[in-house]
Length: 411
Image 1 (cartoon, one colour):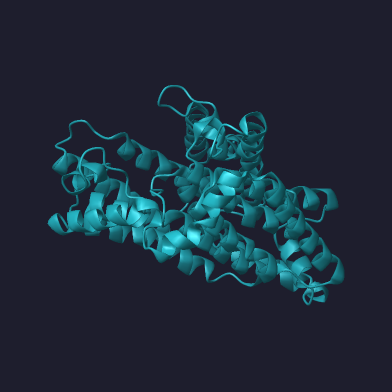
Image 2 (cartoon, rainbow, N blue to C red; image 1 turned 90 degrees about the vertical axis):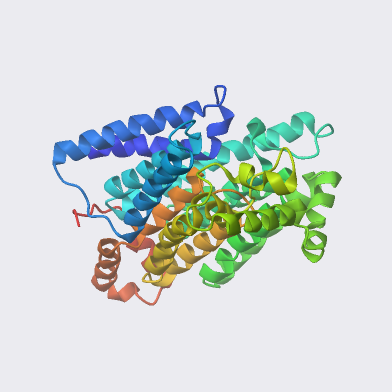
């Protein structure tokens, strides 16, 4: 039964990067359907087995954060006109719970990475096709009308996963298929014209020098792949997009950040008026409206958004979630540790300039990292390494074998 529930979860994760391509008015229909199906099957599987995994600090902090947002809705908004963002947080915690319950083995966690990378190919290809159709009429390109900055960050998160999968697979064809995401995703990300996305990709690309063993063949392959990616960007990215990307340094030097600094300052001022409880989930715009005027924008910073809306208590709980992930992955070793740190750094790079605290990508990546750093998975890797001491000096091959399919028992 858990296998069927896991298959539904796999489809949901596959849909996460491109759920905005197929929508009904105000509803991402694909993620709603696949997520609902996965949740129902997961609950049935838990009832069928009669066992629930013990939560760690990450799940406890996430649950308390969602409860706190509900308390804020009840007290600050008096239970009327409940914002959709509150229900989004509740649904995201259920996603975290499903990954925790069904991600019982390194094989399954690896499968969820494959699902995310494959799903990221969909908006990447759609964005490139959009450029081919309307290259001269648009300044920025994002398939399905999705936010260009969010799309660039979504693709950036897939890069460390794709490279890690390529480093740890024994199948040559699959290895090159994963590596092919690098030029594909980089070109699509460049077409979005996202300056923050460009910085995130630089962080994500650091996984290549951090994980490669410099044999002549692998070095030539990496240089060739990076050269191809750069050539595609230079040849196909329009001039107006290139000029926008080239203005990144100017925005930083002038402390403008695309107009975000004014929003951040207004958010800090709003926080000082309600520091503990905040203004309630989804109320950032209302909080800064007296200072910035009508039609205010979102925070463009995940942590500031949480601080203003949920106050110091909410920020403490949300930060506990993030820090628990960091401390967990520090227990990893070798390739897994470098991969997890790069993925975490890429995620933080995405969260700082965007209001992403309620995005599926954030909760999925953090739940995935908690999964691969559980004590059971770590013990499994150590046992496999001890079982093959003759391969220990060859770090990439040891890491590859450490993630071969093997089902884990209940912790």
